[in-house]
Image (cartoon, rainbow, N blue to C red; front, side, top):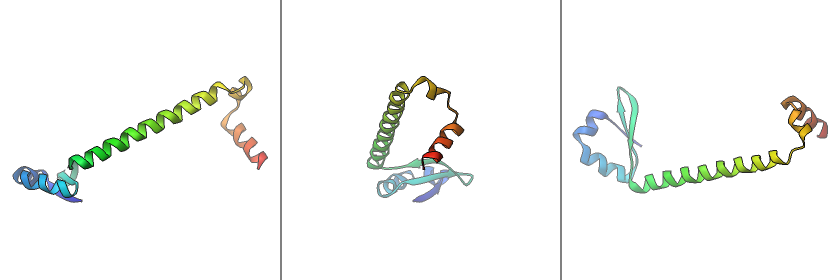
Length: 91
């Protein structure tokens, strides 16, 4: 990934955009990354991954909500150490 300073980015904006079509470009200020410039294709890919992640997290949370709804009342009183002990006993 190419890295340029914010001053370079200002002075060579056209070149920066052309470079971003080939690979993402990091823009730094005082040695720290402050922005990234990337192609529309890379951005679409990132957004698709984010959307997929959100769906997976939502599905994961829904699964645990449904599992929690099926728990017996006694199970709600178990501590983490109780569960760990029972798992170890079953091994």
